[in-house]
Amino acid sequence: MNSLYKNYIKNSLILLGGASLFSIFLNFMDIMSENASFVQGQESRTSYLSEWSQWAGTVFIIIFVAIGLNTFLHYKNVNKKTGIFIKQLPVKYSSDFLFKTISSLIFIGVTLTVLCAIGWVMYSPYFAEGENYFKQMWDTAYMTFAVMVLFYSIGLLSQQIIGIPLLAICAPFGAFFGTLGSFIGYESMPYAIRELPIFKIALNILDKFFEFICFYGKIYPEETLFIIWSIPLFILAAILNSNIDYSNMGKLFLFRRCRPVAYVIGSTMFAFSMQCVVNCFEIRSIAVVIISFILSWLAGFKIIQYFVRRFD
Amino acid sequence: MIEIKGLTKCYGNFKAVDNVSITVPKGTIHGIIGENGVGKTTIIHCVTGIYKPNEGVVLIDGEDVYDDPKVKARIGFVADSNSYFPTYRVKDMVKFYKGIYQSFDENCFNELNAIFALPEDRRINQLSKGMQMRLALMLNIAIRPDVLVLDEPTSGLDALAKKQVTDILIKEVAERECTILISSHHLSELEKLCDDITMLQGGKVKYQSSVDGIKAKVKKLQAVFSSPVDLSDIEGILNIEQIGSIYHIITDDYTQTMERQLYAKGADILEEIGMSLEEIFIYSAKEQR
Image 1 (cartoon, each protein chain N blue to C red):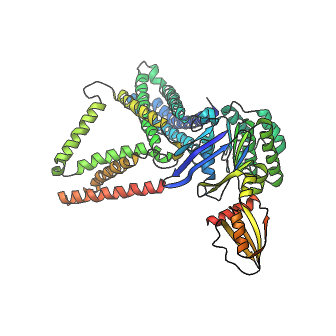
Image 2: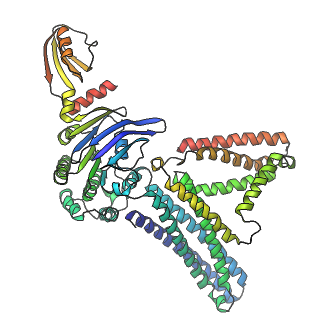
Image 3: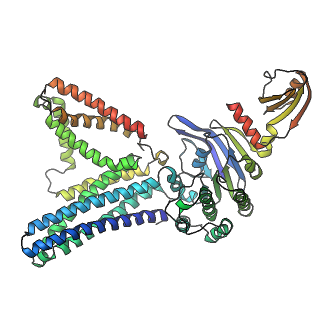
């Protein structure tokens, strides 16, 4: 492992340490009040576990932000001025991918250990009573792990496509909220429109797609599904990573062909999402929906165009 | 040996470097000169494997440099602005370089630091521009490179440091047969240092020759005419400056034909005046504009 990777690991560990200390601090504050309640016999075991899950969620967010920040800092070094210095070094960038993946997964593993340890210490009075709360705590931690792996794979894929690190980190969230907005927007549309053949065909295709990727009919827990989904994303990211032209680093799209995809999908998601707003008005004729959809699509196009011109 | 063959590099639709070919034999120093934005740094970034050429190839001893760590490990690169990790100390950078370059010679670094006297405990962001440049030079010479690429290496250095750098570079070539490619605006230094020069204009090669070769090609003539004359119809003239009856004519195509034409126009006296590389550069740039 060369110095560049050591540098990345050092930053990872610093962030991990910071995030862990912060989570321990939060848990410490909480345990003080929890212990007081326990002594007074006012808290149920279920609510303790519920509290623990909330803290696990908090720590998950903190760690996710830490990973994002670390990757951002790493890419910042591969970018612009310092990037010239980094890019001159005799380091093959393709292996950079493997390194980041492995180190981040180790990072997550350590985080989980910290989470479990904190949980175990916190709830040891119940654990000592003989009930297997540890199993439930582990389930929560495993779910956290699975979600993080999935988010990480999406984030990594975004980083292979988008040359602006901060935007790449935001991309999975953008995609998530865009998809959510599209579904809600679609549900907001009048029944007559949703019954149009074009939507029926599109939904049928989507349904088949999800049926395929979600292994409908097969019994898999959600956590396993998340990890299974992340595998092709990691593979795709690895393939893209080995073909990156790092000369384009700092531009919006590392792969030019992603540009039309971003325009079409982004504008369409925006147009669907805006139907939630249109739904607030009383007039819900088909003409209004179609016109508002087209106008929203064009507005979405213009917004994306602004960002592309601003950063590319 | 550095071989740049038909190098073309575009940024979007803008062609920064257009079909440039340069060969730098082992153990020689080659200078790249040209106006700002003419493509010098782009060529250097292609030579150091930072940029991928759109067309053409950059070979170091016959091997393509882009994304090849083995080849890159043999290249030392001092950029015009070396943005090392700002919070690192000088000694941390030495450790970092030792981890990256197997050939890093700490003794060599210490010897160089005995000359440049950089405080090893100081952080990079606390170093002045000149000190950062010294650090970059020391680090990149200490890796014992076969090829040393320098982009404005004396930028920000005081006169003494410039002299020290020049001496070190000459020593590197003399003792280790290091191949050096330099881009600089300090043409008087390049004139003393370089074996060969490439002058760029609009992303293309304008002149490429030894320093003496370029001087032999581009000439300044001092001609005295008894009455005002129009010399615009004579081909090969880059620039004319008139002070009374004395005309200073800059040409990159001084032949007997031109000499005859000037005498035919009524020149009483015609003599060649020596030009520095800087003057050649200035007149070439003027012609371009």
